[in-house]
Image 1: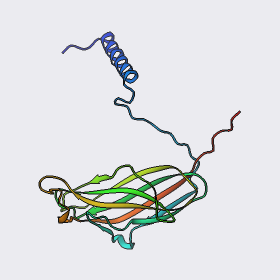
Image 2: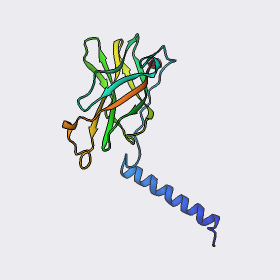
Image 3: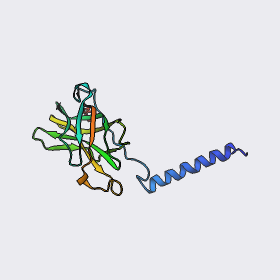
Image 4: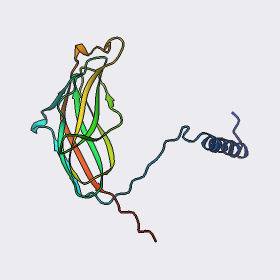
Length: 193
């Protein structure tokens, strides 16, 4: 087997790097994610709500949604970032069905202030329990009192075997749940000289 010489290897690396640089200039965002940065201070408060004692069921979810899962009252004293984690075990999903989760932030009046821009989809073998953690951050939340919770529903996968038929109303069970919210005050911008 022939080995690539050091000269040829370094030339190949240089060509690939040049190609990536050209693509990045010609097509901004092509294959590259946009990064946003938010600077905060040490968390001022951490709120945690656990499911019922003893690891009981915290929600039975269907296609028509359920009441909020683990609503947690959060007080924000100064503009802050909210970092939210939800951990749960789920079971009872039928074949061809997925469990969809997202986070909601509502104000004192019950109005939606923020939510995740998508739903996490999870599925498993209907005979097994599975578990996982999802997380999201909400930037620059104004001072006030908020309810942070998980919104959950099931969705039959279109086509056989789920067929996308909500009349079947498949369910899933959430157990051993925990919702944690970190309130992280936004760092004040540096003074302008």
